[in-house]
Length: 86
Image (cartoon, rainbow, N blue to C red; front, top):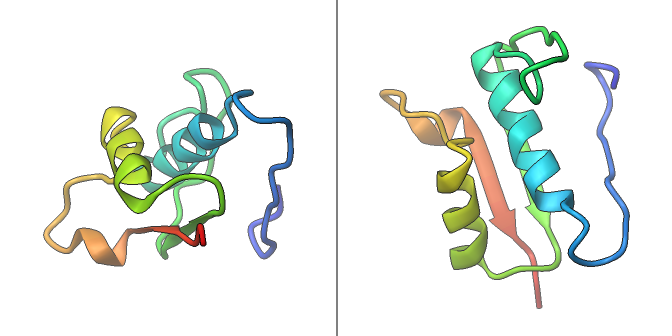
């Protein structure tokens, strides 16, 4: 995915979209290989995630499970995971 572009992940429910996106965010933030296999270029900016399918609490719980919200002195400057579910 180009560094200057946004990415939209679309698939049927329960296919792993959120897990994929959270793991991608972690790799971009830490520089660790994506899914342990694909090299990434660590970013110096922020990663934003907009999720239209789950509640804020559920999204936060999943983010904690894959550790995509990396502990830093100012974590809010690293990852923004936002539920926009109505």
